[in-house]
Length: 204
Image: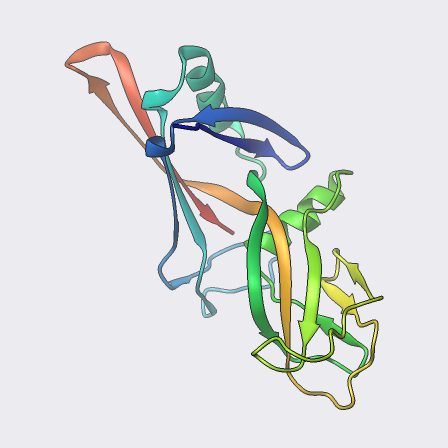
């Protein structure tokens, strides 16, 4: 069974871990009220869906890895970058352009990580692949020859639209910007000096 390598830590300075797949779970979080994020552009009255919820069980860590992981609990002044792979896909995200030449992708924990990485002097992790004017993803790829500005989430289209109509964006990314949501622990086999930690993170 192949183990899963992932990075977790401050954006641009993540630590690398390796874990048995049985010790890692990633699901979409329930629709919830967002109380805070980096930009402060969401308030308690704003509902947001699709936040990644990441569960990590330390039972498969070496002691060195476990202690290094637990040290991340001391980071209380910023969010954390969680990156697992280079080919997560966002397919056919519907967005309404501001004009025939530019469109902004949605504000999410994916784009928050991109912004945080660039602010930290690291490389952004979103790659825009295609932009279509229909949900089937056929016909003209309006992104071909265009560009993407991560700090503003703005795509400049390579081919202008004929009119301001909704577009469907495909892009790939590495992970999310997350915050600690919960930590639980239990003794292993009744031994009080051997603890198994369960961590839960949620996208911002």
